[in-house]
Amino acid sequence: MFRCVMKLLCFFAMISVFSGSHGESCIAQKLHLDKIKLPPGFTIGVYAEKVPGARSLTLGLGGIVFVGTRDEGKVYALLAGPDPTRAGEVITVAKGLHSPNGVAVRDNALYVSEINRILRFDDIDSRLRNFPQPVVINDSFPSEETHGWKFIAFGPDGKLYVPVGAPCNICNPEDKRFASIMRMNPDGSQLEIFAHGIRNTVGFDWHPVTKELWFTDNGRDWMGDNVPPDELNSAPEKGLHFGFPYCHGGTIPDPEFGRARSCKEFVAPRLLLGPHVAALGMRFYTGNSFPQEYRDQIFIAEHGSWNRSKKIGYRITLARGQGKDLKYEVFAEGWLQGQTEWGRPVDVLVMPDGALLVSDDSAGVVYRIQYRTP
Figure 1: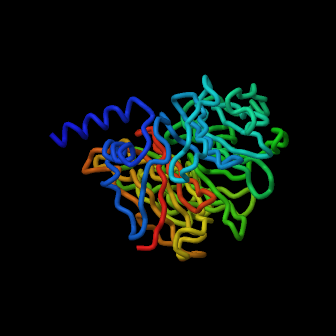
Figure 2: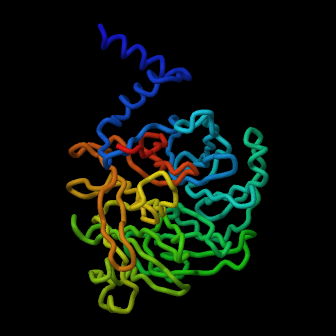
Figure 3: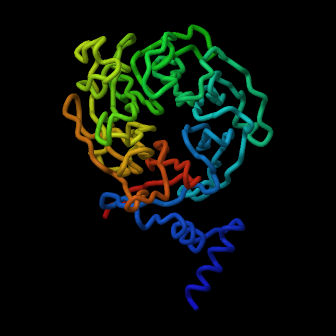
């Protein structure tokens, strides 16, 4: 009888706006949040549901969180509510776009990346329910779909950084824009290549102290289950080359292109990540609510392998340490149960209250991880 009552409660919670502990418990039950393992003192809950394809996250004015998508062609806004642990409302602010994966906010304008162009929506905080028509600030990016979706962010130099992934699993394209991170002024002018030899980065951030760019990079496929690793890299200056397509993981020559150039010619990764984990979004933790040992450390969203014989990833990992002494460890896991996944983390975002948001494009939700003294 009790189970029947709970099923009915969950049913009504899913088809209506349901508030309170029963609604939260039903959502958690549906998403298997009880399976997520975290360090002592940390808890995870649902910040926003009904966010299909939730991918890149960025913070706007008034605690608004903008969420990009890939296949859905939409951009969402998660509005702050009276309860800081839950979004007050989820609204669609733009639709019909071409893989609008990346979102960034500057001067009350929302920047959105499509495959071959960057859009700007002005005066967003006052026009959420009547979103403005976009201004195209640059439409000169390649139109290839493979690795064409883009994470974007503004750097400490005020420029917008835009990656262009390799249009292949492994190749050496003549167009040097491919396999790079580019940058430009907020108005789209002075577009230039900042870093080369990057197969596909879908997440980067700048060190809070040194202002150095750090980024994840996805290794190539079809070299086996255990090679090459995904990478965590840093680029302290313009013009560095990180090895693609000649070298992987700093020491592994590519079977097809590796004879042309030595791995010693390129910048080595700062940290080797798991093979095929699909490391995407990453952020330095700059909040104050987590224990001090997490300050300025890197949280990484691992989307999970798609063609490995034994799945790996589907978790949040941590790059902990300073300088050359970095350690790679699991922070949150449980989205993969055996060889069945029920969620796929994409991006992470530090909120003003110190909580960590995590997007999940498979479950269509945004989670919130918080810390309370055990």
